[in-house]
Image (cartoon, rainbow, N blue to C red):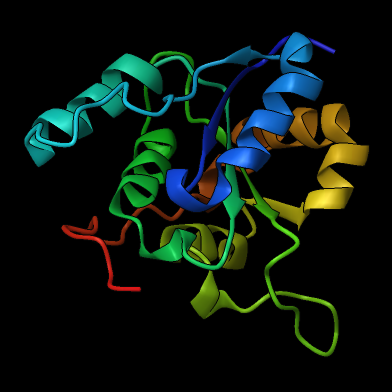
Length: 173
């Protein structure tokens, strides 16, 4: 497998342990482009933060993995990261995969609820652009899941839905 440039989008307060596990167990297979805790100052303006995310981290990212926990959909930075990944840039769009963490409840048929995931991710799952799976499935099939999301960025780019207005604030917990 090619070492893809992978950005992991997640809610730092809740899901850091999962991001750490991915980097520990699979970091040798990818080039990490993710933002670490404290790398972007919270007192930066929204426009400056968006610019840092888009140009500093996601400009050459080939795959964005969104770790979906119970509060991820409430985070504006997650929305901004997904939006930036879906924009045309050097190297094209990023592939997009939603990784549903064990804390997420499932429906009777084993799926997840759109209203409990980041809305922009939900838009792209509905359109057929984004792939998605459980945490266990992702970690058991890491290389093939990343490779599939990478391939989708070319073969399914006409299905990208980045029409939603970006979030301006975090939703309350």
